[in-house]
Length: 163
Image (cartoon, rainbow, N blue to C red; front, side, top):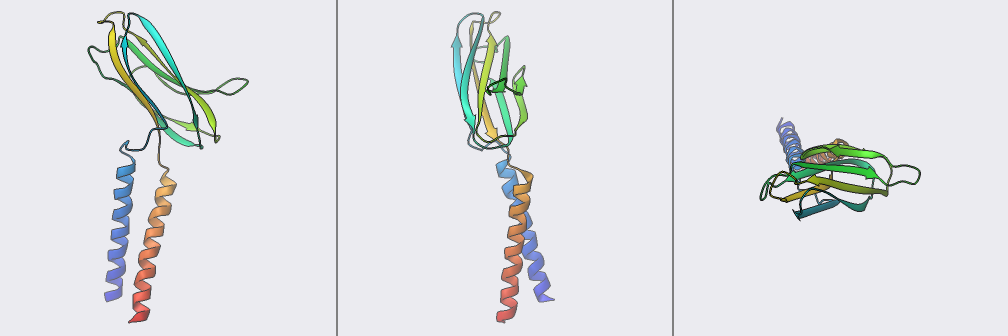
């Protein structure tokens, strides 16, 4: 009876640690794969493209923020495309500030992120930022959780045989 109680406690602690880990990884604290922050001081329409490589296949999150300093943009968009010979694939398109997820199938995919803006009706100035971060896979969390449970059960079993 005493051993069952220990195993239950170990299982609860392992489950709690997995939930805690999952909550920290989903908060956007991941290191961005690509990011930029710009202050625009020009009238009208403009755009800027940044090239980078996504190292591994998986799910990614694109975020575009209009800081509204000194005023919001009249138009602000982020387009994320693959740069592949023979035609690229549009991964993500944000036609206004916000967040979206997209999938990359191949490792080492060359990518371009293009920000398009318009300041025609405001003070001709504005500040924006964008980023691309990897989204942790639920399977990885499941694997980590089952590993922690296995370690807890193994440790409890060793104590039983030593006693």
